[in-house]
Image 1 (cartoon, rainbow, N blue to C red):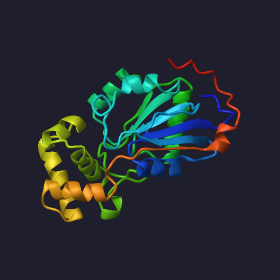
Image 2: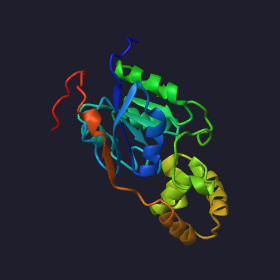
Image 3: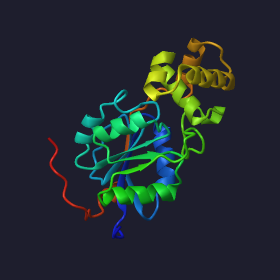
Length: 231
């Protein structure tokens, strides 16, 4: 792979600002310019790659990935997730994603993968099969002791999904979902779903609408290939 002569221009997208900020904090390096971060907002900047963090929303179910890819202005879309089921990876690739990266990967491994994707490769790095272990960054409920997977289940409850719908969305067994719910409830001190919903709304589980763009990076010349026009 040829060495890039300029930093890769990256946008990071998720429904939760805290998740986006956490990812951005450990990916900002001399090889990566995080030009834009967004929660529940489409990307507006001219970037090389859109890193789509799937906390609380799964491609093909929570979002229309094909529309997302089409509206990204020619940037490559890469899924960043701790949901590593084969079905989800296949959905992402069919939907137009250029890569699928596990959240258990280190920052340097992610940067290297993104650079490979920019060189034209389709990169799938599933990492550890225990997908809720070792995730970097931040997520709602972390301060209460929730693991990433427990937090994701609470987020999906907040979206109004039943246990079976959660299981179907994240490709877990219904018993696994119930186990995550029980452990999450114990940590946040609730016993009923309605109590969990109230706690979640009060503790950062309501999706955000936020966009931040680094004006200094927008002024930097872009030397990558021209983008096709948006339709």
